[in-house]
Length: 307
Ligand code: NDP
Image (cartoon, rainbow, N blue to C red; front, top):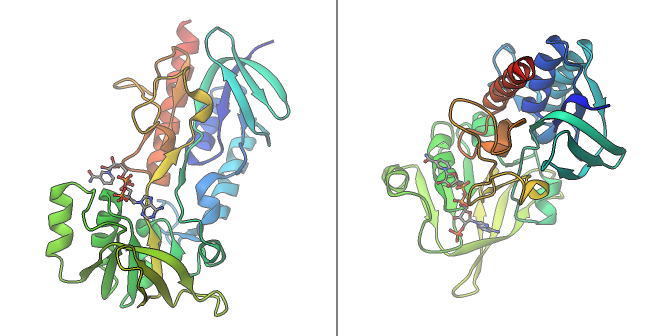
């Protein structure tokens, strides 16, 4: 027998959708994916999620969302989705734990931050290495930090960080920025922002000390290696939506994000909805993901009532 609705992904969008679906008595099945809890499980303090005046740890917030979804009857399965067939109703979801038929799907598989791929980057994550200035900038008051990347995100994060840090150095691998002119102007006019042009990060120091003390940079033109002192480094080299399994089945934009219709969370396939970072390249906040998860759940509920 087909499920009413399967939610794919266990970040704020997926869990919020599940809470609403379960409370609507739709008995949702949520499939967590490879990283149960999503991106927030690799952050530390979350200070901007309303309702937690003293902040909350990312993993704890996700655990609470999971418990809340389960409290109303969501069935949660720790499994990875290997493929989907959205070409016919009911839809087919193939996972590491078996195949499922379902009348509706909410795609909330999130996006993965791109990382430099350095060993030190993993080891110093949360100890000075961050992928989110909005989340972690506050901890770098009066300190010197670096931002890696030359796109809109990197420059906007750099400008945001100048509220706290005393110096922000943007490390970019070229001598020309990808960011839009208006964002570039804002960054270039800011007296606290400096640029390290045509430099790549070859190492993040200091794994032995257990915290960030600086970056080892290599000039791509001369090959010269230099050290940049800083206590924090924000990697802003883009995100990749987790949409590989939907290629050829759902309409995706040129960056791979799921396209949803205006004023609804429905995708190009009727009965398939999307929420959270997988369809949002702009805001990418836990609270906006949660909000769109709620919207997708309400869309599902209404579509099942009228069909
Ligand atoms: P982008 O893909 O636009 O930029 C990524 C940046 O990281 C590029 O400068 C790229 O360099 C650099 N980069 C990529 N890989 C590496 C690497 N391995 N090592 C070093 N540098 C690397 O991503 P964004 O997150 O900045 O933006 C995503 C989308 O969101 C864009 O469409 C952007 O316009 C939009 N956005 C809009 C905002 C606004 O309008 N206010 C705010 C934030 C985002 P290179 O340039 O050499 O390729």
